[in-house]
Length: 259
Length: 313
Image (cartoon, rainbow over all chains, first blue to last red; front, side, top):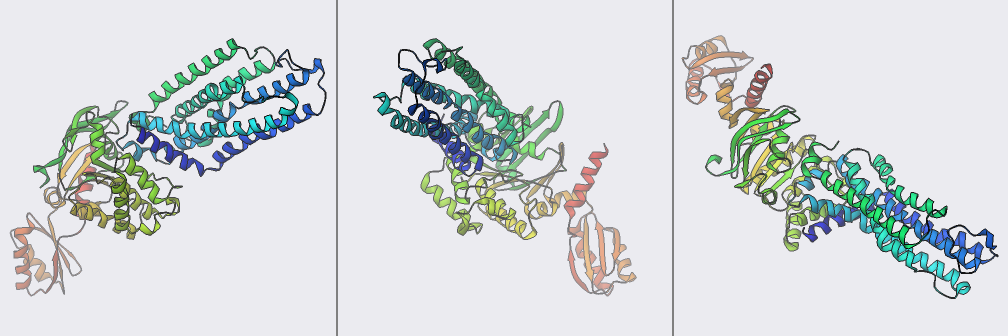
């Protein structure tokens, strides 16, 4: 695989995606809500009031004061929500670059170039993956700054980055992005409408939602076994979808079978 | 001409989609530097043939060589030496003309310096260099088509496949594109042209093939006219009378004569040998000739005859 060709395709897709309104919304609004709005709305009230011991949620850690436990619980909840960014942003970009290009008949000249199917697919995956991860990392930097500024005086230490946030950023987010893009590639062979592709692509948040609801209700804790199991489920799902998308993304298939 | 140095060779090439034959048993060759036209009605298999030759889809049977490389085996090499203008330009409307071309040039592996030079030279050739930084979405259809043709040849391919290059263009834009194609011929590029436009094929192509799933005929427009059309000569006179028409009818080489105002349409077996006697007979009968010519749309007559007959089968 020639990396320069892959990168050219990714760069072109990123440049094209930048011009779409929905992509910009996805890249700006969700990260802004998660990194600035949520910590301000949820942490500030806790900082200025007392937290009764019985008022803690089931996912709050033990062994610390109720106020500290509440802050950590809120921050962990927010950090987990960061998985939404790499799930949503690539589905918007990939919908435009796969379904949009199919509908606008832009794939045929691309397929006529001396690039392999894998190079084109990988370029397009990167074109959706890189902005999603950049948006995630940038908004995580904002979240870290906001949370640490708000809580440092109370806690006496920097709450972020913590182990969970590193796991989310380095393992879960890339896997979520991969899952989302692969699903979009597969979906793009079946639908001819960008919005329909976005809607189906957004189903990639389902594994996250299941995990998140179980975490909120206390069924799952943030211990090693559930965290590794979730990473395994995400990894297996994104690998399976990637293989499926690779089988779908072939010149012959695209020109003869894609609807 | 082209047969001596075939750039494209098809040998029994066929393709089926879910058991339905799209093209069958195509065998012909196209020479280096030749403009070759593939004509046929909708669904005749023109685009399928081009897609097989560009290694976008594989044949069900048969084989083909492009630039000496076999499709399916040396696909990457074939894509390097060919350029494709598909039916739809498929440009990226939000990107500028320059960025569209630069992207494709990089995928074709054109080195950066050469890339800049080619983009400039070719955009100047089509008169769009001063619009290089404008998004192609703001261009007219004709301008977009020119950019798409430039994109197909940005890597200076030996073979160009042009699928309906002037479809949906205004007459003036179509004329510019046709002139551009002739310019490419002067550069000795092989051009494989799919078109519905018989006038265009007759004007541009050295040879044409008429296709309707299978190959119906192949040859130069003039050859096809001789083989399948009525060999006719059109003579326009100052004044036409019965005496002149009868004088022409009496010639042994003449098969029939049609009178249309002051115009004579004379059908012969071979215009090249019959025309001097026709002119002589007219002059002897007191006629004053304005011009003698071959009637236009010979190819149209041949095409309609062959395709019509094939669809009756």
